[in-house]
Image (cartoon, one colour):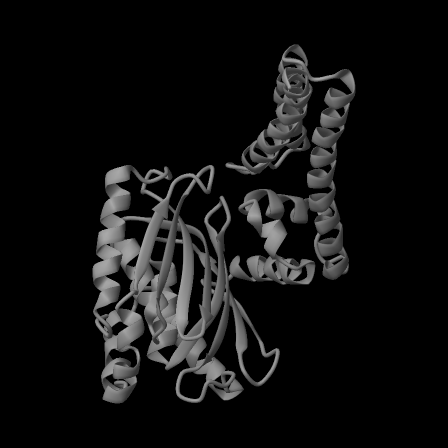
Length: 348
């Protein structure tokens, strides 16, 4: 029995090692700052491999065989190559979609300035559109694109200089036009350019946005981004005019007894605090959440907003005013404030 346990110990050791390598890769191979030069990027990979090499030597000293260590080293190198290849392939595809209008160096700089998850969640053709919008932003305060994939929804891509409360003003302006946010991908470049991809529909009809409304919505967004309008008052005006019927509210009562649910987490991201929010969906919900985050002095680095079966599941990655993760006391305050605010339906 002792012999079997002794033989199993190195096997278990290498299994534990594999788990640690994956965790290390998730943290180390995620950029916490822009990497604009090839030297910086190669340095990131070299540091990862160097640390893993030390771990392998330790495993060898604790009984792992040479074959096991060799297999583990191969696993480490495969992770590095896969990470480098995926990003390189993404850049190449973006260049193809740009059709020579921008150089590879422009694409490399854009990717380096975006959060790491951008490459994983963005299509190359969408990234090419983002680069065009960034070029347009050089001569205007707002650049955007409308696309209509079908009759059920419209996709709006917005590019603007980021500032505290920017997404709150965008979401509020849309709510004031009677537009629901079904999903959103929010990303901010390290140079302060925000790129928000938002899936929308008309609140009354649950259909895609009528193309004849685009111009009016764009004008309102420009005013909101310039801070020339009281967005909260506009949202409240729309709510007053379009208050839900009592029986609709009653139908939500049972579900609301277990919602909202707000959790802050400092372990899921290397450089930001994750805030996960589950709440009954309503027009203006994204505005309500984003406005509270802004009032608490938090900056949204990126976010994922989704709606399923009348419930919203929103994830925000935030930093404090100094660009740091939130302290424990601040996370508790965020959970309390958001839970209280989202528990009172309809209050702007």
